[in-house]
Amino acid sequence: MSPLAVFLILIVSLTALLVAYLTKQFQKENLINLNKNQMTKTKTKTIEKEKVVAETLNGRFAMIGLIAAVGAYLTTGQIIPGFV
Image (cartoon, rainbow, N blue to C red):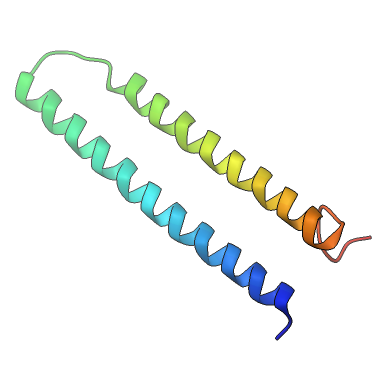
């Protein structure tokens, strides 16, 4: 197996682990906020908190994509390896 293939497998694996971890954290935060709102029985804006968390995840995934593009460019000289 070539070093590039090993590197790409490593990057894909790390990205999958990060996505799983962040998804679990997102679900945990939603559960905590839901329980907090049920205990206080007041109307609060849970939608706003969800939007903040969603935008944070979106930004993190965008940065992962940017780092992957820079890594691909540095290792292969192409933005998308395999395409000329």
